Amino acid sequence: MRSERYTFMLVPDNDGLSRRFSLSRTNTFLLAGIILFLGIMIAIILSLSIPVYFNYNKMEKRYDEVIGERSEVLELYRDLERIKQIELVVQKALGADLSENLDNSEKLVELKSSEQIRSGYLNNIPSLLPISGIVTQEMIINNDNDIVNHYGIDIAVQKGEPIFASASGNIVFADWTPKLGNLVVIYHGEGYFTYYGHNDLIIAELYQFVKMGDVIATSGNSGISSGPHLHFEIWKDGAAIDPLLYFPVLNKSNISVKN
Image (cartoon, rainbow, N blue to C red):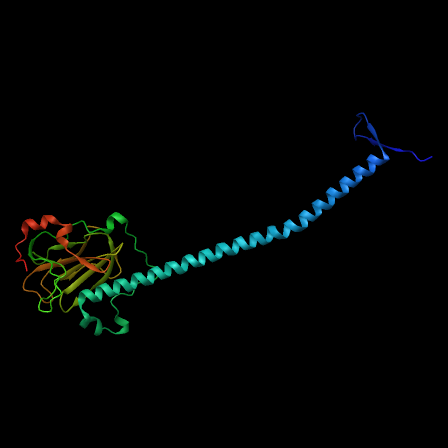
């Protein structure tokens, strides 16, 4: 007669006591079925999850690559827009005649794409008086054709005095121009530019990074000028701003005739 129960014995490797237990045939088949079912379920889960895991890692890696490439493209786009803005502002300040006479190899601004503007936000704002002197001409912006616009102020000084960078930034123009003579233009970031015209000597070099207070030139009488002075301009987002708003102390020495 077939036994209705199954006896299982657990024998340890050491000299410990062995253990035995018995199950009925029904319970034995039930336990075996449960174990087999769990084994099949685990196998199915592993077969589905392992490919998904590797695909996820692959997709995550590709996502990181795409984000990196997109960041590089955006950075190059920002550099290109910055270069365009710099060139347009400089050309606008110097006049159309000068830009028309330049060859493609003599563009006013040709910054390398890897060149970074390293000035901090607080250093971007012109806050240091480039030179001390007497204001002989204020800023004039008028849409009337019979009035010549004057996009900055003139500060009368002796020839050869040091001219300081009003804020930290990169030199984007340092050369001779017909109107403003030896001109230095600094881009400070955040849309700020400053212009220093009629210099005697230009000390700063093109593309050089200068800190606030660095000597960039010496005062002179170059270009169309009636005497030694500094022509100083401040531009923000393509528009000229009155330097007297940034340096009200100059009003104490302002002898210009208002127009």
